[in-house]
Length: 244
Ligand SMILES: Cc1cc2nc3c(=O)[nH]c(=O)nc-3n(C[C@H](O)[C@H](O)[C@H](O)COP(=O)(O)O)c2cc1C
Image (tube, rainbow, N blue to C red; front, side, top):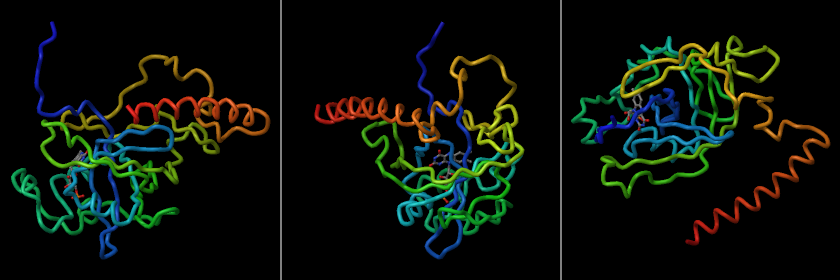
């Protein structure tokens, strides 16, 4: 039997990401978040509007999303309940947060120069995504159950770096989910992925079906033609929604 419940949080399990951004003085700030999802090479993150990460992303328009494996859980926990923000917002004071000017050192992780952005990557994280800011959207501002002002940042992924040991084949761009065990947060507790459980219909055919820009020759031309027709129809539908 199902019961109507009112959970305080709806954290159903998403990967933990360490967002590295640059502070105004050029030092690095690192913040764990887990409100994140991807569609294609675009990504949406949900961040507390009062965080240092929000300030840095707004000012610099870029960041690196570093995905830790399960074995980096202690580094993540070390910087939990800290903020790079000098003046602690009241809700963070009440929750026992502390100001930490050098979260990078506290995490014990090593900065590594990025290729497309100025914020550094974190060497120990096996997946590092360099990203630039596309859109900033107020999030949940019309929902009475949203307790703190929050922002959704839409990011363009510019570069993907993956540790070679996670790849299906060292010369190809496929990450093997049997080798990659990300750190997951579910209802404020840490987990990771387990074993493969069932053959997925979605995994039939090449992963490249999702990346028409990887195709060559006539196949690419045909795909572009189909996509152009599709995009026109889709864009019309979106503009009708906006007008309504
Ligand atoms: C595992 C984990 C997941 C978190 N997820 C989020 C999140 O999705 N969004 C968010 O705003 N804060 C999240 N936090 C809290 C932020 O880390 C916190 O707001 C932090 O103070 C931000 O740091 P900053 O102010 O230096 O940017 C999470 C913390 C932990 C430890």
